[in-house]
Image (cartoon, rainbow, N blue to C red; front, side, top):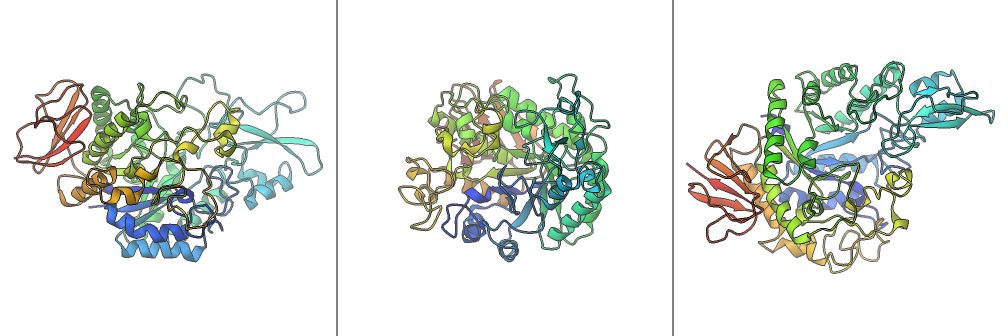
Length: 537
């Protein structure tokens, strides 16, 4: 069985995971110290967010050197040690790669600015003359995903206002021109560099964004999900070439696509047998906590993956979205980048209860599951960060109307009763984002010996995923006999999952015994917002 088809993969957002050297920023030394914890948790692989040198305009997703390590995080030798030590603990390593754009500090872009219009260096990016009488208007009407125009005008070497360059994200992240063969060869070499160092997979940032529509036309309908800078047919040729590279290495090396692709048929094209191996399932993450909506997403996901024989993935949170403990405690339990509902009334206890139930649902579905660091502690979104500490470019680019993603990126609480909660060694610099003063009860050490904690639930569920042959890759059968607000399905051999999303307790189907429940039963009945795993047959 290919490992990615069933794996539990844990996302390490490196600067917020663990600080080993005391500068208030998570690093490779901290990650190495916590590898035993991750092994004991029961995961199969670690996905590490970008660890490359970067000016950090967008938390490392603005890369200035793809073959080295950000000095704040450590050294290349330490990165190689992380890979080796993880492998010793039977943990695989998935590394982030950022091919859609680089940093404006990357040598290529520095050369492009210096080279001037028409230079070969500018052909590696999307430099264009502006519109208007004096080129004072952007080349087209595209908008940045972080707010504002997707074009920035440069000052030419002679000091005159010059061309514009494309950046679908922040101005510090110029888009690379994948029509240029030098760009393609460079990234093929980067893939080999890390595969030769033993990484087991690569998570591809903005996987559907590499190719732009010919002519860079204006967008006619901004409400349409189809855009001229995402999901162009030419991107598949790139991934077929990447697949040939990964298949040439020993062991199972996997590509994971990050893309918010609403069209199921077009989504499936990325997962054909000669392209990428798997992709994040953001429909599930964004879904309302409603039985009908969840079942529809599960059915659609399975139907999308089946024709290309790919394994689905299930994810509840990551470094870009509001933590699901908070989302599930709101009246509107879904997620939308257009409205993060920052500050909306939240019932923390209800959100936690639903998050426990959702975790067991996700881990019981066919395929792999992704966990975002801290969700096993039951962490909620930190919504009261002072404005002056916010670092997400979304906050700035939106004119301070979108508070961005910092609230899900606050450094983890490991131990102790006050900040930094074991994130850093004693007498260290303050964490790069402030931690809440009331986190003492959600630290790893506070939950480690509590059988009713979120951490205990995750450890139990992940342990069962390894021992229960019904879990992981495979199929499911929906079970009848319940009302419309209950999800129930069976998986072979002899496993059933029941999720009660109704307002009243429900009876359990015939079973031999209970394997795990997200909350205690109520006189033998399954309470609202609770999931149970059963041995049947």
